[in-house]
Length: 252
Length: 279
Image (cartoon, rainbow over all chains, first blue to last red):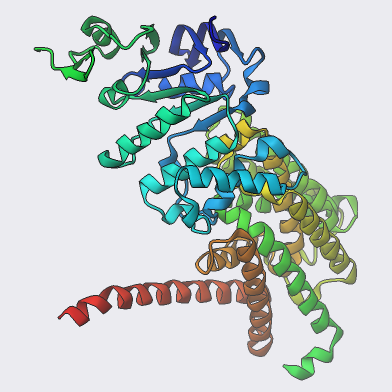
């Protein structure tokens, strides 16, 4: 039986001031997929996520999310943006940030229920940040902040998790821990992770696509050097995949 | 000073100061944390068009300012969000256009505008009873709206993108927030005047921000700070016979700078502490 399709992009184009940012994108994301999208900075990775979230309207093409429009479906999507962009002096506590993730369940003019609070505490425990719940978010370390934003995304109880450059602000030894968390989460939701860092995504994801305005979708992790070069326009590391994940540096 | 309290104008002035402190304490916190100081300055200055309209139509200029300021805040909000003009360019243009309209309206109005100066720079000692009642009403409106939409405004200010994804109607809330700024400007016009409004919208909140990281506590502290500034500014201006609006602003600014200085000093002492014991 084939898994249920969550996201479908058909011939999607996005233009920024008549310069194409995304060209003829076709993409299908199914339940329990763990898709890594790699590509150079400025290649349209964030734009692609925002199209799925309905934050950017494509100039051409069709976007279907959970069988409906992105605007209607997006409250079922957990989104983690490039989070070091927020104001680190902002007066908000960890618990308040995580509770934000429950807004899609309560809505305008509704107060949070005891169930919402319990759910927020639950996800804080999942990311091991419960002891920090009264702390100001901006004063935490990069890795701790990231776990708070993951908790917020999980609190939405998403069917799909979108992560934008999630490893950019955490130190390498925390990255492994982070991918193990994603590895556990992929049992219950589809995950799309975009990054310019190929080594970061190669081990844990189940499929890889390359994005540089156009999407080169592979359906498996074995990406040929030619395909990678097409999206990066320069020689790069070659990803191979055997019983043990390893990388081979191609001569150049 | 104490004997001055028996005068009606002094009691009115204290009440005006209190009402101004409440509005600028609550809305000023959003202005500071959402970083909409410049757009708020634009809304404040554009309100001069409403003062002029009031003169032209022969109605209370503060009422004219209320209608005009709400309309212009919606206008500035929509232009900055939807047009392709850079936000600060759009604000600068509408800021000046509002003031220009005010000057034209006053020029067209019959007779002479005797208390124009008090709208520009405020005069807390001459707030009429009707304006006090209007300020009270607007304070109630502000408190009720913020109480109802507290979490929505918090989310809008902290992370607009995530809020939009979660189903918060962010654009409409943003326009409503600008309307709250407009109402606050109207509350503050009589106290410190159009040109000085922006200081009371920012200084109490900026001071409160140094003391807490809870938005609610920040609002309470900002209200207390605003009360302290308006009361002490009023007292100093009365004692030294200075312009009240300007005195209030200078007192606020001075206290803010002192608090920055104290904070820096304390940090330096804290940082040097371990070094000193190690040496």
